[in-house]
Image 1 (tube, rainbow, N blue to C red):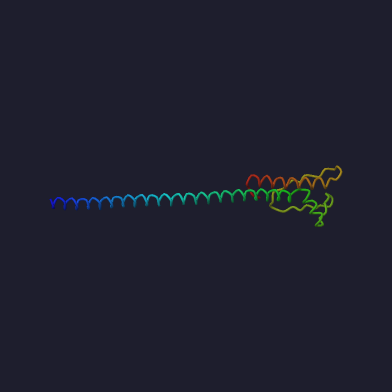
Image 2: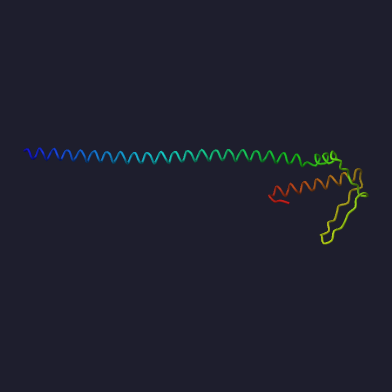
Length: 146
């Protein structure tokens, strides 16, 4: 009986050691899986926060861009440009005071003659200025450059 009792004690010890080792392996595996999960969750949260910050920054820059475009449009208005030109000492050129020079090897451009009504030079100059600003705006709006 002593041998049976001794074998039983050894068997129980081996069983307890195996059980403890199994439990330790399970706990280690679960701990590793928990660590991997928390690491990935942290990475996703950090990336998501950074993405939100970038989207907020993009929205702010787009708003600033629209404000600058409005400011540019105000600064390029025909009436503002005309008044600024007068402030700087520019005067209107009338057709009888204007000389045109031809330059060799350039395509000819037909100038539109001013109307003979009222303030003809002012109307013609403002029209050409408005046309120029309008064409610049159209080019800009289409994404091109002059």
